[in-house]
Image (cartoon, rainbow, N blue to C red; front, side, top):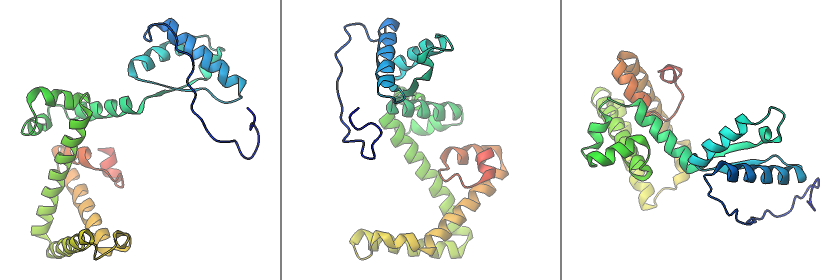
Length: 223
């Protein structure tokens, strides 16, 4: 409040409010919290931005949408906590890949019950590890095929292996990769191969859509 409207807003700080002696999942408790924070935000002329974990976020959303259209609660920006946002994203990936064979692949590494939690997004750590492993295997398949079919690509990959060893040993700085034409060539070649594979069959389109991470291709994005 002291620095309001000045060029130097002051140092940020974190303050804990008094505990609300109620069950946190009770909608009365959530409504009281929303009202208090909304009034505090209006007092300081700032928007009310509130982050909840998933169970409370859902109830807070219900309270907000059931309030009167002119209610100040409508102006609150509700955010889902980053951890639960990640869980929902991983669950969406698992749902999209349902019956694709991804579960069977993961069962080669994890137990059957663990795979259920991985695909639902509940086991975040294993889900991240599993998806990264599958992604690495899919890219390796594409690289192996390109290495056999394209001699130039094969020689460039060998050069990149040497560059990688030099960087690990400290002979070359990591910044040297920014201007590397070899990396650009490898990236463009792999991306073009993914586009061709995605156009060849629905199955390829599904798996490339699962593992792609660049977002450069319109045809892939449509898939």
